Image (cartoon, rainbow, N blue to C red; front, side, top):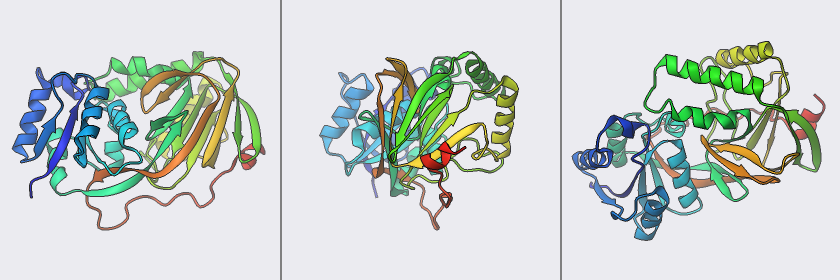
Length: 319
């Protein structure tokens, strides 16, 4: 059966650097896979314009070729609609592609269009903006600019350098005073890094920042307490070993909605790897199963069960 879809391409994604004419290569791969692909007009050069054409086309499947930021833009365009988002990983990290279990090469991901299954996953929303995995305030939000220098470089050495840049940023970045409001509770804290995650992270050796579920219906807030560089390294080791979610160096609790106020007039957020300046308060909410995505067929449920003892803001306040 021939598959028909609208294709949105980010030519500046990490994979795009490997090809002189990336859009032409993408068209070749879609044609080779026998996909009836529709592309944006020549006038639609940016991602927003391409997504607008995809929405107006009425085609029920939209394949987005790009990195995490491009996929997030696709999620923002189609969350809450019947349109199916097909993720074609063309970035540096490709977090959602990993979590869905998609092939990580573009030709293989395109071939999956004919045999994948549709599933509904949760998304988060902050001040009206959609994000898929995490929204981070503080030092890590400054890593996005550094990450641009690693596009197209996926060696262990490049990731180690990026990790060390993160450690240095956490060491130098001053703690921010914020207040977390949820469930009638108000918790003031000082933190160098605060992350709101769509469903919780899994634990286990090597499962660094891999979510346990894509449709658990919860936001989980992590706030890093002010700590010394040596204790920070200890936390990073605990993350690699897979025993870190209950670490005393972190505040952690699950919510469906949360408001975060800050002592600063503007704060920098990193949503799924893309940065933006936002005026507090930050109002977060979970949108359960709001995004339809295409993934590999599953014979059994593959998501790890959500932690049965979900932390709350009240419990975090007592720590």
